Structures are given as C-alpha cells and as structure tokens.
Length: 394
Image (tube, rainbow, N blue to C red; front, side, top):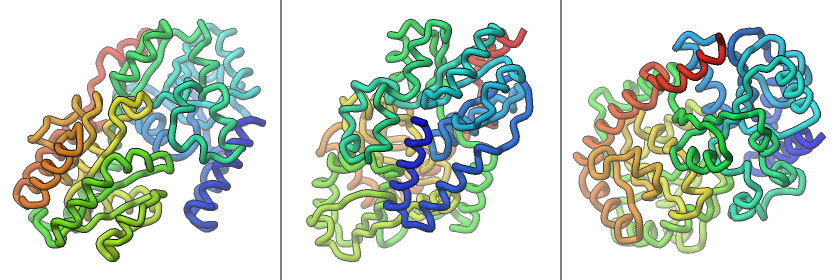
C-alpha cells in the first residue's frame, strides 16, 4: 500500500503543478507501465517508475548494457507480477525502489535461488537523515512523504545479502562504501535516440550552429520542485546582470518560484511549464547560456549528477555550474564550461559569456564533443562494471 499511496500523492502534485491534462497524462503513463511486457534474460531493472531518474538510471542504463551484449529488461516497482520474475533473470538492479510486500517477496525468491541483487541510486534519498535537510521536504503532501519515512530503498541497501551498489557520481560512491558495499560508478548517459533528437534540433536551429544572438538568453531548467533553494544561491547575481545588461533575458523552466525582484523585470524574466523530453531538449537549445546552481557543501546537492551539463552540451549550449565535486570533475573550467564557487565567480563567468558570442559558440561546441565522447551509450566503456556483471552470469 505504501508505494501506491506515494504514487497517488505524486499524481496529485503533478496535476497541481502541471495542470489536470499534463499532470494527469504523466500519471496515466506511470500506471500503464505496470503492464509493460517483461520477457527473460540476464538483467532486470526494477525501476522507481517514470521521470528523469527512472529514465536515466533504468531505461538508459539498460540500453547501455544491451549495447555491450547483455540481455536486459525494465519493469516498475508496482508491477504485481514481480515475484515471478525471480525465475527469469540472474541479476536484479533495484533502482530507488520503495519497499513493499511485493518487493519483499521478490527478494525472498531471488535469495532462495542465490542470484545477484544490486542496489542503485542517484541521490541520497535512501538516508532519511539527509532527506530531512532537503528544502522541498516540508512542502511534500502527506502521501508523498511516505516515500521518505525510512529512506527510499534503505531496506535493500542495509540487507547484508546485497553486496554491490551502482550509482551516478563518485561522491555518492564514497557515501555508499561506508555501508560496506562494493560500488560501481555508471554515469548518466544519453541514449542513441537522445543523440538523434539533439542532432535534428541542431540541424533545424541553424545550419552553421550560430550561437550569437540578441537578446542573450540565460536558461535555468529546474526539472523538479526541489530546486528553489538552489536557485536562491544565484538570484542576486542574476538580478544584477539583468539590471546591468538590457539585452539579457532569464528563462525559467519547471516549477520554480520567483520573487518580486525578478518579477520587476517584466518581459525579460519568462516562466515556462514542464514539457515532453524532446521539447525540453529543444528549449535548452534555444538558450544561449545554461546555468546549474546548487548549494555547495549540502550533501544532497553534492550528490547530484552532471546531467544539466550533459543535456545542454549535446545541443551545443555552454553551462555555468556550481563548483560541486561532480561538476568540477565533469567540466574543464574555462574550456567546455565554467564552474563557480561564489557570487563573484558567477558574475565574472556569466559576464564573459554574455559579452562574447564567439566564446559561447566555441565553448558549446567543445562541450558537445565531450558529451558525445564521454556521456553517450554508443561510446560507453565501463569495463570494470561490465566485467563484474559477466562474472555473475557464469
């Protein structure tokens, strides 16, 4: 019942945030995923459901493994037939799943057959102590909060039978190792389809890939309702830049609250709703500068992946990101993007891009090259991880 309560709570929030039609559609898609076909093979991903986390950490990861010869399927945590699938696969990757009677029965069956269980997460929500520090936690409805009461998937992580974890960042890997687990980092990557969509967007946008434009559009793609406090870290800098440079526009995508200071800029601060993924990528391509602010030093923020850099990079848009461990590892500062540790650095680096269209274009092109090389399933080469999985299939 717990996972169904959470799902209901998320559905209510989605409709409040995105409207009855758009939010309702997301809920319906989530429901019908329960009945997706699940065959047999090597590896089964048990996904948390729908949304970016499930998409990148289950569907994209499954495609990567298929490209390296593994037979993979993906299902969702609320599939009522889960316990039966213990017979059909050899490795089971639980991606941020909410513990339930059905999950417990499935795990019981897996253990009885001495098969492999892997815990997968892309953030710190498995630890309720960290969750309570999340800015948006207090704004969750009662049903949604149930997801975090004991930590998402903590029962699986704390089970001695599960000896291995997979995660998205080296920061999270170190956190998971404190639980005595073997940990593999498998970064977020773009699927073959994602790369094709990006290529088509670039071809339509401009044959020459020209990034010089007036006005200069700064884009912030919040994704979820958990980013208000992250945006707070750059609000003063952005307001100052809007005052100083009349050619600058700020485009805010997703459920983000703005204060009166931003509202005072009238038509130069524009809010946009959630959109399907293809349109989301098109929106990013329409920006001149992508920003990825986070609270530096906040463990929950430090655990976040470089996804905002990846999605902007694939469409040739330069990113200025908070100088978290992950972004410092992903971005070569001043070459394929910028990282900023304080207000002065945010101001200095955003000004460089605002004033120099050639720099925007050049940095975006280099970022795209990096993403194609290091963050696509087509070019993936996580040899140690693949070797471990193969050892469990013998």
